[in-house]
Length: 314
Image 1 (tube, one colour):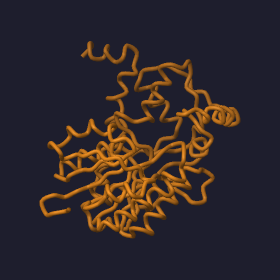
Image 2: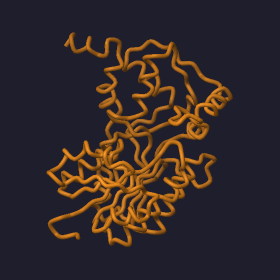
Image 3: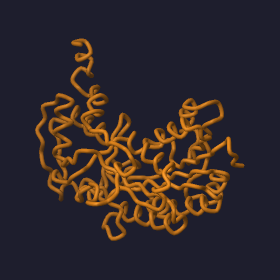
């Protein structure tokens, strides 16, 4: 039961990359935080981010309406961060957000925040992008006052973007370039988490959609060059034929955890930047953090010698 001195927030996907930062911030605001997901054990490491009993992992997949209803009962704030890069997009990203939003509305939640993605488009040829758009529509139908946040590529110490390509730079004799002219606007995970908290706190954020991007737009080729310079790797950038990449993706996507799929190739062919005139971080009172301010610190370990030479020189 919600009381004046016990605010409850339920975060679906709270154990993930963005989720852990959102959970930390909600706990610092003195919320009781329920982390809802398929595997409660995966969220146990976050229990130390608050007082004893303040952070509570729960088993509640977004596709399980009964479990979702139990997870949001008495919650003042509900945040849905669940997303996948491959798999059952229709269940998890198209229908799941609507299930969570319906339960939040029925439970009388004050705020609902849906974290989607730039590029969500019902007419896209990408299943990922279509499912994101369908999820947004389901949220709007069930909880009209919801705030929708659409980040570009998110970076931070645990990311699967800069870290992934830095690992490739360490192992490969050259850097393969796919869709080198595609533009991204990388946004810091801490800024995305701050945007979630701003959406919870600000009355003017209710019912609005924000696109979140950092201060710099980079092409894929520029991203790879930045990574090579930061990790001090002298590798040649080699443009890969899309036909060859499509053939490889068709084989790789059959793996349980594929490194590349044909759907991801479709996404790589489209710019991932904040739309002109669309509300963003500044409208939420957040100054975006640059790639240069954060990424070199966690890519240091990919340098020759694991970055230990830099420490010794200092």
